[in-house]
Image (cartoon, rainbow, N blue to C red):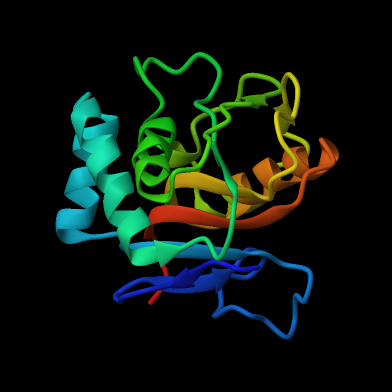
Length: 188
């Protein structure tokens, strides 16, 4: 069971190197699927959602992802958590996951948390982002189901946060089927 794009223009890449998926160099990697690339209107929507406190954009953005991508079977959606100490009033990844959930009729489990305070990935260079320890994120609470997990985030730049989130999901003895993001950054 894998994610697949029903109708363009989405892209699918390897969680380890961000090259096209499946990747011969990383056979154990999971797919990261982005609806669009990060720039122009796509970037403006993410910024309005995240920094403009336009929570109302999250669910429609998620619904668009859910319309274009098929889960290939039953799944649970798990959003990437906000950083500890974030000044945002809501988690944009959770809002996007709720929109996907409406299209796919699947549960959303908000079960991930950062182990400690870390600077926002946005302010870090690509090299520093890549150095994010894989155990930076942990699973909290009960697993909730035996469904494979699809991680959800707004933007993927290096894949480090999604790899850390996947590590937490696997530590909770749950399978990661893939990740969905609104936009892939720095990928041509």
